[in-house]
View 1: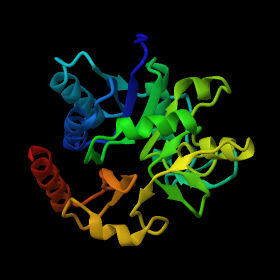
View 2: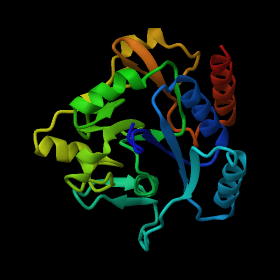
View 3: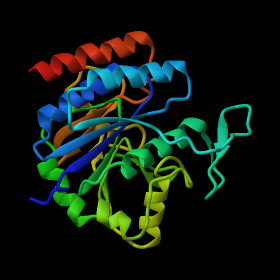
View 4: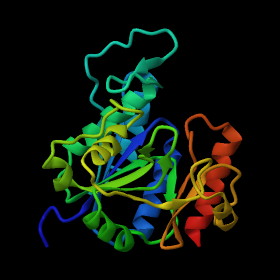
Length: 259
């Protein structure tokens, strides 16, 4: 096996460290292909520095996990409402979309695996997945968990691709079109490259009937399927959920992973 024949799982983190701790437990439980994990967090204030230090200490004995400080380009957002303009299409997005794209770039440039998997931290794996997803990654330009129809872009709550396919065309996920990583779909559409969107229960662009098959007893979030089998759950707005909803996630996911 070649030394880079593994998945680089890049997770962006915005406080609330139990999300990422539970996600990593699920990665360890359900991922059968070799992987390395790269946790990327902004460090722009004292609270974020505490998070970075906490994660560094918590995972200090894991050689397969590295904690990274996100790059911080010398850019000043000249606004009063925390919204800025995507340079490619002029759409207004919140500043966190740019911070997230820089975090992804940090992880991508610091890793060398054959596959790159971008993930939100408020996700959890539900079943084995790599043996089903990776053949699709070989076939398609990328695989994404969900679609956003109003922007005509694949979303990056879970988005995986083969590194060499992107490197050959010098493609790096950014926030130039639509939202974070929207430039990937734009490039694929422009060049007639096929990609794969997983079946999911997201609202409004997914299949709402699939909500009846949710394995986690939660009032928010969406479940993602591959070949009719649930493999991932995305909570959404993890940093903004009310405290009791955050605690509900911790309880439900912890109990599920103990089964």
